Image 1 (cartoon, helix red, strand yellow):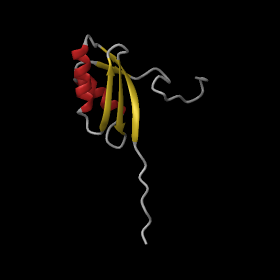
Image 2: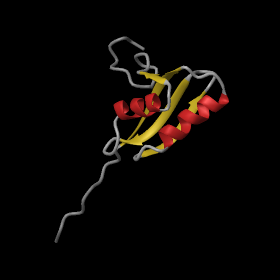
Image 3: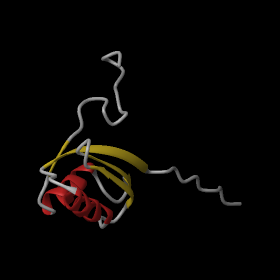
Length: 94
């Protein structure tokens, strides 16, 4: 009898700081660029916060690839400030 294979979710959510957004059309452009990347399942772009929150499959795409997609769309994507994306090593007490 074969053992059942356990498949773990490789979904991750990351937040990128965006530079260069000037209005709703800019946010829409970034949203479309990120959504078109294979492995991306959800994108939320906040014009007010200048941030993009992306849920993606780590087996298909990396944060660096997401940054490239934003750059290809004509904007800059920076890594979030430590802990801003919900990831914290715990060393800062935050």
